[in-house]
Length: 124
Image (tube, rainbow, N blue to C red):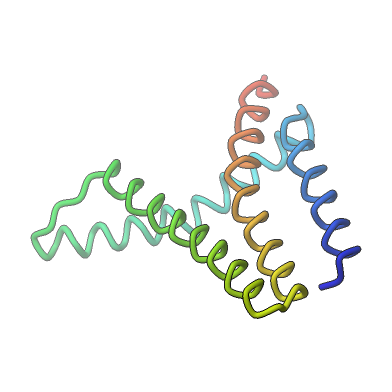
C-alpha cells in the first residue's frame, strides 16, 4: 500500500468515526452494529455457551464478554506485532497494510460506542 493511499484511508476512517457520533448517520451505524452483533457475535456465543453448559461447564454472560474482549485484545496485539516485524524486514508497504488493519481494529469499538450512544439519543 502506498503512503498516499494509507493516509487517505486513515483520513476516511477518521471521518467515519466522527460520523458515528452524529445523530442521523451515527444512529444508522449504531443500528447496523446492533444487527451485526446480534447475528455474528451473540448467536454463536449463545451456541457455544449452551454446548459448554451441556458438558458441565457453566459460563456467565459477563465471563463470555471478558473472553471475547480478550480475544479482541489479542487481535490488536497481533496486528501491532505484524507492523513491528514488517518494519524490521524493511517492508514499509506491508507495514502500512498491517497498520491499516490495526487502525481499523482500534476504530471499530470506538465507532460502535459512539454510534450506539448516538442511536440512544436519536431514539424518539
